[in-house]
Image (cartoon, helix red, strand yellow):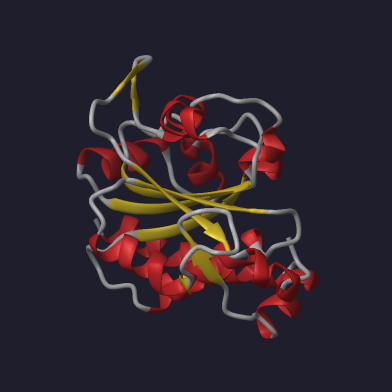
Length: 212
């Protein structure tokens, strides 16, 4: 569908427009400092390049969800915006389409609602789902929703072929809650074996980012 292909490419332009409307994000991206990630939220854990870990997740990981946790001001949202542009920079037809969503600015909305606001019709959205067009949803600021509900159910994600990158403030969710809140759900029943990969912004790097 040529019209849908055009609208998919238009998502990149809209993401740039969104960035250009937010001076703090523009300035943050200009002086963005690469972050280190760890598998455990303590200073003794092995550190690795967080962007490389995210790119590896997008390219190779069989998990469908990645949860990035960090303290307030650690650079979670800025990292999400940065990765959206990195993924767009490498995008080719058939690859995952990145879409950054600020959850605090889209409370009560589903992914369908967000795509409609970006110019897609209901018929086109169903076509995206039916044809299993791959998406990479970057859902930023889960803790800012102030309610603990499963994201697949809240945003009606089940019919999408997608990987999801979540960001959330550290210690907002307990480890035992992670698969319940972020794992794939099927009419209230969690899919057995569905994995949620965890990473934490290294505490030693948190002072390097001044934008949430």
